[in-house]
Length: 125
Image (tube, rainbow, N blue to C red):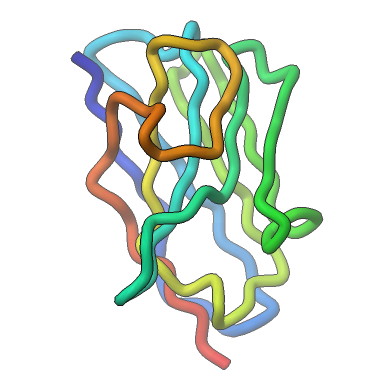
């Protein structure tokens, strides 16, 4: 079993920055692809970013590319998402996820096996 706990969410003005962290416990996630997803009220959960186990492959949705940066520290079992130039449309609950079956990140939430409880990000205009 893998437990994932997100932190770092909050309220920020448009143009500001936040850094989300996902701390894993139970099992090391260094061998797993990791992803960040978000879900706004009334909308489906959508892919934000993913990173391979060796951090050599990163993926971003078109809506966040150039503004968000995903990284991981396998020694600390932590995956982070640096979010810059935030927009009101980035407002959502952000979830961290682990895929134990493949090494490369997927854009599909159905590929991920473990999920955190989410952290709220609110961007005011």
